[in-house]
Length: 107
Image 1 (cartoon, helix red, strand yellow):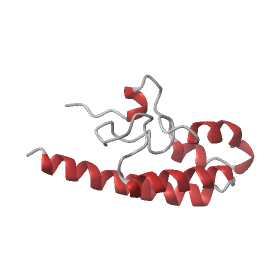
Image 2 (cartoon, helix red, strand yellow; image 1 turned 120 degrees about the horizontal axis):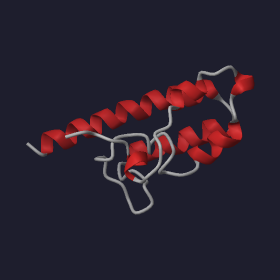
Image 3 (cartoon, helix red, strand yellow; image 1 turned 120 degrees about the vertical axis):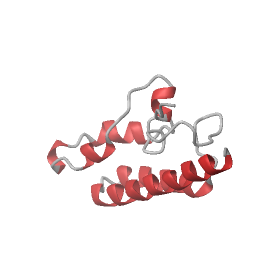
């Protein structure tokens, strides 16, 4: 079974947050990032596997992951790439935990 991101499952293109946030500050288009971070489908959480349970607007059901998504948006809004990248790592880690839990439950 091929895993795709929630973003892709909703008809959008996957977005490389890490690449964008590692650009030189003067090259980062914060307006574009803020718009993407402001929607659950295109935010950092949206770029995660589509098997992660979500509500009707794409928010992760897991409250820890959901809060990390909010924190990520705040870091983008504050134009803080260092914090955003740190939170991105935490989002990916929590996502991996949830996917592992889901795969164990399905066995």
